[in-house]
Amino acid sequence: MPKSNLTVRILTTLGLLPLLLALLFVGPAWAWYLLVVAASAVASAELFAMTHPGDRVAQTVGVVTTLGVSGTVYQMPGDAHALMILVMSVCLIGGLIPLWRLGDVKTSALRMMAGIAGPLYVGVLLTTLGLLRRDQHSLGSSYVFMALSFAWLGDTGGYFFGKYLGRRKLYPAVSPKKTVAGLVGAMGASSLGGLGVHLWLLPSVPLTHAIGLGALAGGLGQLGDLAESLLKRSAGVKDSGFVIPGHGGLLDRIDALLVIAPMVYVYATWHAT
Picture (tube, rainbow, N blue to C red):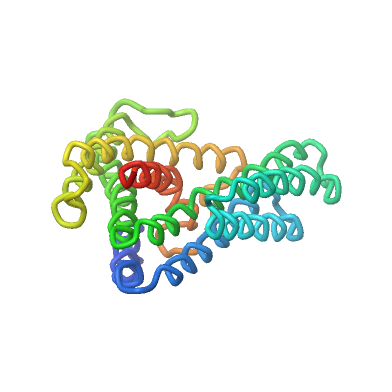
């Protein structure tokens, strides 16, 4: 009998988690960023496969642009001129590619906006995990772990609360399975994650901040999940891809992290000043 999807997900997570944590806490910052780059490449490939179906050239341009965005943000986060040039370049590339790769005119607006927003959505937001690891020095790994914990625990809490306690739908037009109970479970589980990280890794972060950040992250993570669900629904696909056994695509796994990581980055930067 084939394993259930939940069993496969758990086994996959248990297999990958030690490697991920070893790279985060033992490996150098540049090695962690290489993982971020690889994740950005895969996630953007999945995104552009949905928004530019069948057009491998446009998909490749989107992935390359995303990696260019990530590299620029990572190398020159404080250079306003470089970031301005970056934004202008992304707008020009994303906006003009549909003129070259015309395809179905009815989808040209979607492809144009995806070409502009996609590299920023994946390239900027995910790269905050690299910036956290590098720029927060000795606390960098702990802050990254905080962001990962918020996303993982929020996803887990949302799943089980929704499955066993869910009655009232949260946003059925976008995600029929999401419930208000799932939202509460996500916020509660992420808050517990904040408590654990405060006790074991980041005592310098006030307890009220850690728990409050967790609750906010749990709510934001659900919104990030809904946003990606809306994208998939509009593209007519169930999963963004099939990279991770039992988990679907990588974008399916990091949709919450894409909004949680920038929140933790902003807090860590503010807290360090």
